[in-house]
Image 1 (cartoon, rainbow, N blue to C red):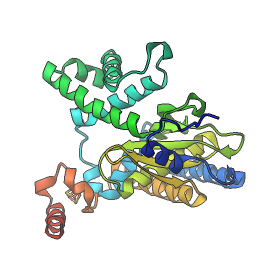
Image 2: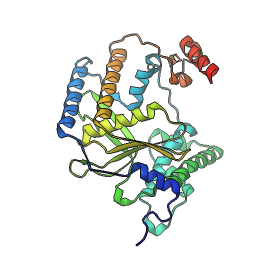
Image 3: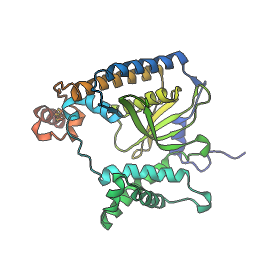
Image 4: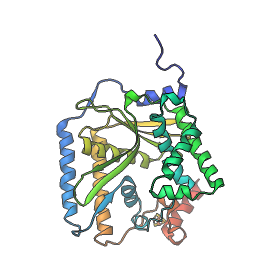
Length: 313
Ligand code: SF4
């Protein structure tokens, strides 16, 4: 009999072991799931009553994390601009999406084939990344292609080959609820598996470069909560796959994880409303976000925190 893992690298096999199902089927108590959904609905209704009639609030993992990390930083204007550093993730995800649907008659694509196709498709879109790609000089274009191809290569070499039987999807958008002034939303890098009735089988993956940190796990717990609110069946597992080190850090989804994510999300929304709608003055909370805070040199607390970190490193 053929070995289904034949040709897989040790890293691919190790990653599969971290992500695969094991033991008994995972089935969450339906009453627990309904209680989470009911508590979230009730809380959002209370929050909505604090907003002006035409106000709307968009709640993402990034906004929850930023308001809980440092309120002063959270209120700074978002001056987002596309750069090679932040665009390569989006382009790589599109390249991986193309890999999933690549016609077999075209043979195995190389990472640079996938990146070129992804760039061509994104350049055709009216989204701001399309305008950014169309404005690149030849040298900048080569730089983006090269850096994104590294990311795609890391994924192709180290992640288990995604069988169509796993129902893999990239950049899947999720939002809840679909009415009302407060919307929780997210876009998952990669997910696979489908619930079988009430049995949890879905796995949510975030692709990251750099070192692990606590925020990555909190982001994934937020996605697990969103999935529970939308589909009524929690995912089985969440994992961050670190492309540079080819390591998957996975957590089984549990009632405790979902409850913690719910409390954290509600705390974040409460603070967002206090700061953005009710004009409560923000507090400063030095921490990792001082490293990319636009207040940088002008924030005494942040400078003290960063110099303390430098002294102890
Ligand atoms: S430098 Fe740090 S403490 Fe100061 S506002 Fe920015 S994130 Fe907050």
